[in-house]
Length: 125
Image (cartoon, rainbow, N blue to C red; front, side, top):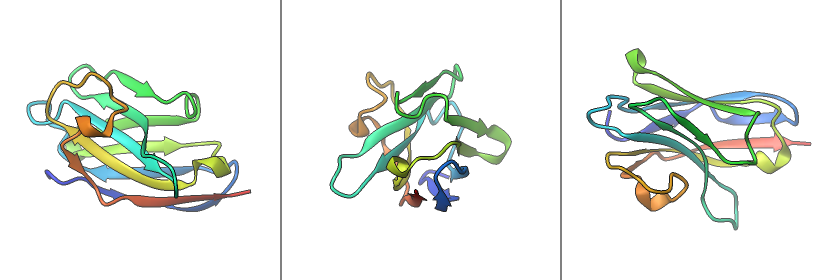
């Protein structure tokens, strides 16, 4: 699976949870980094979380630390983003992205080679 495919978005009330899934290659020989980004209307795309496939090291934006968890299932070639304690400001289109090369800044969209079409997350107050 070269092109990531996201699923799991939806509408929830504030304080609720959602789990996003991304079907993509988790093979470390092909994918070095796997990340989740989001983009709200009128705003720039921002990095939410990232996972380095070889070491398993994870990275999070300050705004989601302690609430979101990125993980993977290698057997299923799937990346996840568990989102808890959701807030209205988490409302955005969420994208999965993968990178084949070493990257300096995991939050930079240009560092990623492949992108999914996105899945909408809407959090109501």
